Image 1 (tube, rainbow, N blue to C red):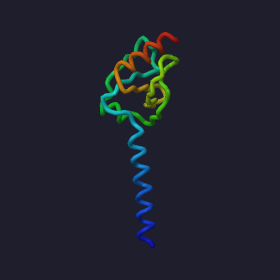
Image 2 (cartoon, one colour):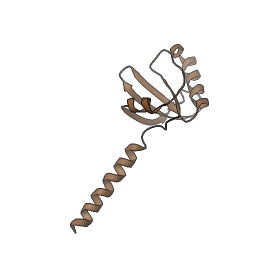
Image 3 (cartoon, rainbow, N blue to C red):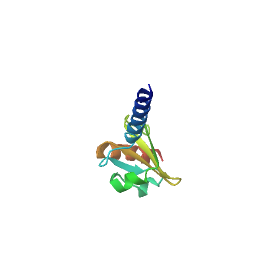
Image 4 (cartoon, one colour):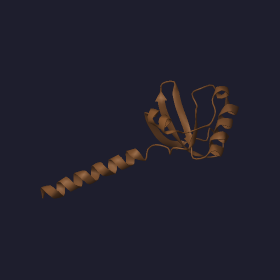
Length: 102
């Protein structure tokens, strides 16, 4: 019976670690720091180095009131938070919409 419990615990731990690993945007996606002044930020490719700085990411509707676009909101610090999109076009559209709303 103990081996079955041990396997069940390992399965739960594996599932939790897999879910946590998929909670980050993909390297090569595009994002911008939306806490900065819209005139001083731009869409940039998300590098491995930047991914390592993300402390917490959550999937959200990152449309800023424009076209619906799924995005990750990734916290770096109290002064830095990135909105990350699958494509450069989606990132640019969201940044332009956010800038227009300012």
